[in-house]
Length: 416
Image 1 (cartoon, rainbow, N blue to C red):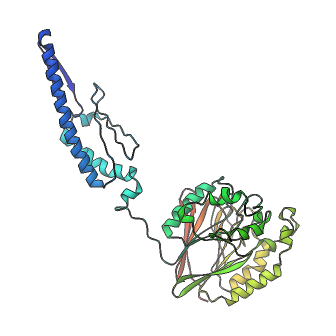
Image 2 (cartoon, rainbow, N blue to C red):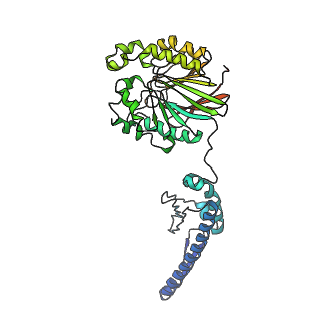
Image 3 (spheres, rainbow, N blue to C red):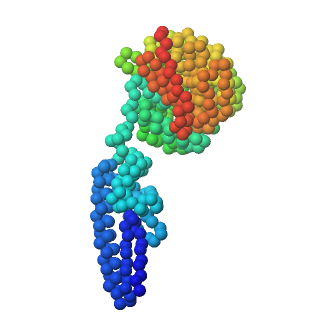
């Protein structure tokens, strides 16, 4: 009696086995086995050719393999091993019906772009997706209120800062205070130097100068230790409690950055036992006199002022009366383009006449914020601010811990 067996293989070809009785069973089995071995050799040759073509198309260094396995009723199992990981399995009846040549063509075209763009290391895609070139001018990041041992979104914000620093070619980072919670640092060997700073901001893109000021939480510790740390750790730069630095924007344009210690200006702090005697020892009239003189003497086309406390704010702390009275009039008089601060744990842009006020105190945990009469933008999201300064404009971007662009604005230069 004639018995006919049929089984579909992995590419739709059919294998027929005819048996004419028990006497011919051994011969049939041997013939079938030889047929299978020949098909395997042909398949391997074709798939090796596919491998070579695929590797030549998407570049060297990419390991691509496909293994074929025939099982009744289970169709095809394709395994793509990319850089030692990632297995993709596909089982589609419509593909099984096509010829081997057609399947290879479709598979190659569909997978070339999708797989390469998704799974290849960035170094292998550099030819098609080059690194962004840094913009010209003066580019930097600014943020504050961050030192929490890598917790409360600090690590996530640091990762996005590194990406942004690479993108814009940042030359330095400004920290607007509250560098270490809750009580600053005790000494230059305090463990927080590692757990809140060195270990968190270790990306090569962040190994650039950090221009630092003090916040109220820093005053609860040893402020002199933060100043001394920079003597043995070059990227940490805080030469004094208040200071000025000049930075060239281009051959004909300069930006002056005035770094203030706003803590002793707040009268309530002098009565706060947590601040210690150090804040009461500060000479407020001396700092204000220095600030007035330095602003008046500055020939820079761009003038930026950095302080820990806000002038106006929709955040939890609100406006700072002492700064409204003592600092804002000087900013307006000398046509300062921007004042940057922290203290309120959010991201804000406010306007006081022609002076732009930017709050970037969202380096770790955040607090609620609201809009006021001065508000142009306000959001309670962990993040930071990037600044791109050119001869005639300042481009501001506020970015959250996930890399989302929350806000962007352009500030024209004010002619003196």
